[in-house]
Length: 115
Image 1 (cartoon, rainbow, N blue to C red):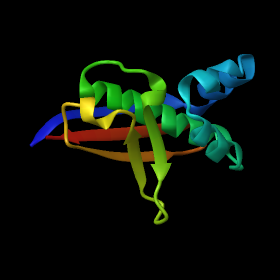
Image 2 (cartoon, rainbow, N blue to C red; image 1 turned 135 degrees about the vertical axis):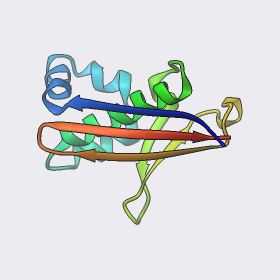
Image 3 (cartoon, rainbow, N blue to C red; image 1 turned 135 degrees about the horizontal axis):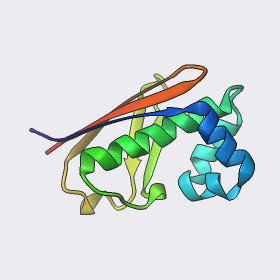
Image 4 (cartoon, one colour; image 1 turned 60 degrees about the vertical axis):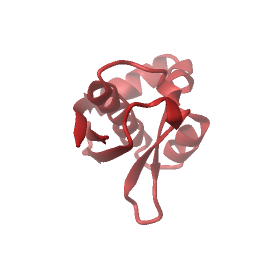
């Protein structure tokens, strides 16, 4: 049974400006593993924006905000994205599905929560 759906879209330039203005922004929003992953990419701000959108979509699906770093977006070897959640036992859902996409100027994500 679906218990929540969330979607978010963000401008890549907005994430880039925030990161360049305050490097602490990245440390506040992303886990060390996410920062390491994105910083290796040619278009790192597209990857940051996609992860930001995934976290925002998760908040919307959940119906409340939680700590940014309690949510981590990882890629399986196949390339499929997956949400990893800190303290998973405290969540009120059994499974989280995520899809992300990005272009040069925008990134978006959708999250579906199941019971």
